[in-house]
Amino acid sequence: MRTALATLLAATLATLAAPAAAQISVVSATVNERQARPGETYAGTILIRNSGPEPHEAKLYQTDYRFFADGRTLFETAGSRPRSNAGWITLSPSRVVVPPGGEATVRYTVAVPATGEASGSYWSTVMVEGVGRDSPEASGGRPARVQVGLRTTVRYAVQVATHLAGGTTMVDFAGVAVASPPEGGRALELDVLNPGERAYRLDLSVELFDALGAPAGKLSSRRGLLYPGSSLRQSFGLPALPPGSYRALVIADTGGD
Image (tube, rainbow, N blue to C red; front, side):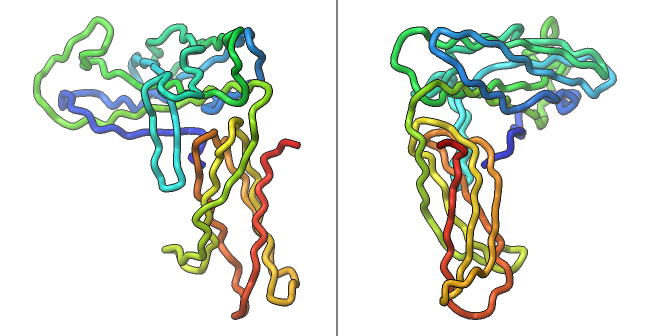
């Protein structure tokens, strides 16, 4: 799965004199999950750091989030997915000026609806993005020059997941193959899908057996949160094995019962 920190690079038109927004970073956890009940309200914080020598503004906004084994990562309109909790989340504030070499804290609250038949996992992301001083979005400022150029914008995606009681936990496999990775050797590759209603962290392992059933090796990997409707690609580098036929037993442990 993608790492907890999702750093996105987006090329945007801006003035050539624009200072780099990369001095803004998120230093608190980028995956925040909580078990909750209908009607419950809970809070969390996002800690933002400014590594630059001048004050820098950051804006926060919400998106939905999905990822797939083929490499696609989608940050969609907040609230557009059936299991989005974006509408439950309130940011305070949604813009903040971080002092030079300092930090600023943004608080968020999650208000779980008291009614309805919600069960399983609901999630979305809070995006944190630096705002250049000469950007039209900057508070109290306007571009000093109209010259057009290319600027790199760095965004941090903070995942906020709410787990309610109930909902199915399911695992599915697809696309199992033995591949030859660019770094050499051989690897067992497979896609893991979550067709259920609950997110989980995966412990994946492979036990190899030769044609006579004797153990020939064991491999393991720990993966992050796999959300319902998302998938990931896992690659296990295979040890050097004598020529022959082998069986591979793949085990996916979601950590539940």
